[in-house]
Image 1: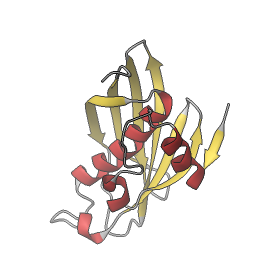
Image 2: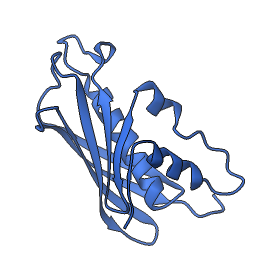
Image 3: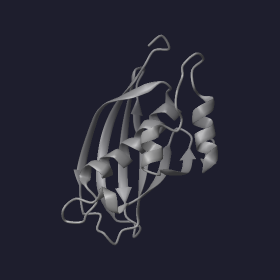
Image 4: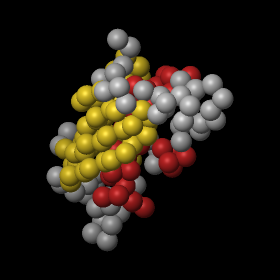
Length: 149
């Protein structure tokens, strides 16, 4: 079982592009959120850290929920691609447990495989603050595309 860290995760993603398919890896949305891949355990999990930037704040000063779910999606998406390229998210459900306050410097997101069928991946994700407390949980369903798609 492979265990990758840092830049080698992006290199693995780039190497998996199907022949003739033009992909931007890492995608602009991940670059914009300054996601930093930390570790990948093949077929098991992917961990990515995201800064909690002031521009992500809602009127209360907390990280807006859409940015939290975007960070989770920017972790689950690459993870699904590492497991079954190409694949796309068909549903994503999120529960928020606590706020990401202005004092929080980053969140760490972890994607995990729950189940895989012939055409579908069932994934879970969690976002944690630097103290290790869960700020959000999510479940995702990803459709595995045929090579012809």
